[in-house]
Structure formats: C-alpha cells, structure tokens
Amino acid sequence: MCTLTYRLMDQGYQLFFNRDEQITRPQANPPALNPFLKSIYPVDPTGGGTWIAAHESGVSLALLNFYQAQIDPNLKQFTSRGVIIPHLLKYPHEIDKVLKQMDLTVFQAFQLCVFEHDFSAQTAATARQYIWNGQSLSRCVLSALDSLPITSSGVDFETVSAYRKKQFTKMMVNKQVTEADFMAYHQHQGALGKCSVKMYREDAKTVSFTKITVNQSKALGNKIKIEYMDYLSEQPDSWLALTL
Image 1 (cartoon, rainbow, N blue to C red):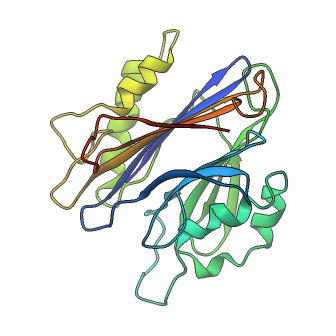
Image 2 (cartoon, rainbow, N blue to C red; image 1 turned 135 degrees about the vertical axis):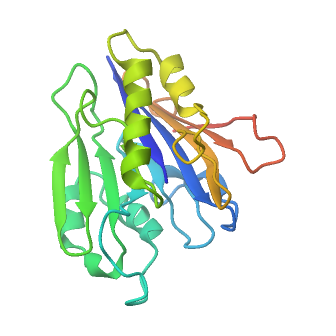
C-alpha cells in the first residue's frame, strides 16, 4: 500500500516514499542514526526492521510489499521483511551479491529498490528493483520515465496502480519537474481514497512520508538528509530532519 518515486539531480538524487499501513499497526519509531551500520532509518516496532534507509556512502534502500504474488500467508510462519534492509546495510557495496545469497523463502513477497551511492543525472549509476515473488528473485533497472511510480496495494492493485500512474503522468510528464512537484504528488488525495497517493480507507491509510536527499558534492555530515513526517504524531505537519 506504499508509493515510491525518485528524482535525479546533477550531484545526486532524491527519494520520496509514502508508507501506507493498517490502522491497527503500531506507530513506527522515527528515523535515527544506527552508528554500527552508519545509516539512518525509521523502525517498525512490530518486526524490529525498516522499510527505508540511507547509508553514509549515499546508498539508499526502500522496501514495498508485493501483493501480486500468489502466496497463502497462512502456509508458514514468515520472518518480518523489515529485517532485510538492516542486514543489507552491513554490505552497502555488495547488495546484489548478498541478496542473492540470502534464504528468501523465510519472507513473504516483496519489492526492494536499491539506489547506488553515485546515482545521479551525470553518471551511469543505476537504481535497481528486485522482486521476490515467493519462488524466485528477479531484477530490473529502474527508469525515471517508465518505472514510476512504484506502488503496492493489498486492495484492487490494478485499479490503484493505474490511478496513481495516471496522476503521476498528469503532474510530472512534459514539464521540468521540481522537488515541489514530487512533494505535491505524494500529498495527492482524490475522491477515491484507496487510489490516492496519500491514501485512506476504513482499515488503512498513509501513516508517514519520507524524503531522502543525497548530494555527493557535499562533505560527510551534510551529504545525506532524511526528512520524515509522521502523520500519526501529535504534530502531523512537523518535520524531523537528520543529516549524515
């Protein structure tokens, strides 16, 4: 039920991520520095892991569910998908190798997006999407023109995905897009709550928004900025900002 987009810059990139969750799920802990992993990320108290993170090198990772996979969740006891990113952060420059060596059968289906440390409009570095469908792991290179937005939804995926894609095209295509355009897209709420980018249903809603900015022209300590808005907090319009 989440939505991810990204924007290339001359010296780096930006990620934009809406996290959608069941209203019964506990509120996440806000982003904090993990000095051992040299990374910043929020923590889901249910599974003890995370859905998005940035490493001091400039590598970023984002995890979404993959509801399209035909898997019966009652077949076995699964490990929380949230532990995947903290494990991969131990090997920020070997993510592809480590992921392929992991036993993924303990996880339900997921999409993992990996953004290289030197990913920018001026380099040949790539963003990659891995999809674990419960049986096999596939990989593709993301395209800012064709791949966005990356969406997950546990309800009526085809309709939701098509609506968010149409809205993205309407707001982003055939123009010189800015950070403000991406911010506006991730705040979009239409008449169809389940389809909105900032979604709402009786049982679920967008609970947080995360923006990661990586600027390789800046020195360590200011190279990476994570901005986080928790819609479940007492001050849902306030930002938490951390640098790395």
